[in-house]
Length: 194
Figure 1: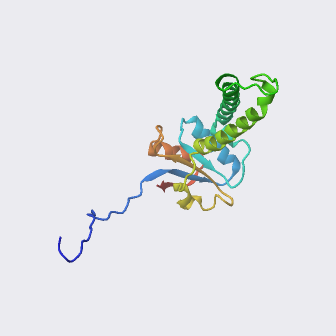
Figure 2: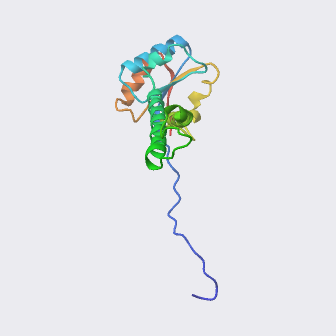
Figure 3: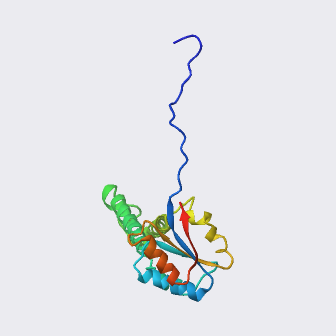
């Protein structure tokens, strides 16, 4: 090593800008009725990876999109049962089996004395399952979504409706998808870049 000091250099390749890839095909709708009918057409066409955006809650949108009920209540129920059962088993193991201790002639294990801990652990695991399950089922945290940067999305927060069909959908075919959106009275059909 020379006396000039040591400089660490990292070999870098040429700087490449990331080419935007198509995320999906978007169509704008001006009325709720047209929007709901278009959602039904997209659902009936067999698309699975698509979404609908509206400036306010639209009654009947979930049915028009074919959205199933969430599995979150089953996850929360399972966590609650696990919490209650785990607390009961742990207290029985500690008090009646592992370290039995007679206190004032009370039995080694008594259900009423263990209910507060069972209740607390049931609530704790249910709350954690609700929070983590909600994040997982909704793919959160999502720090960026391509639709937000789309020019078609500009008026969705005020008075327009938007349907975006993703290119990664197995049923996606550009000409067929574009024809479907045009037949559903979609306006400003455009690509959404990723």
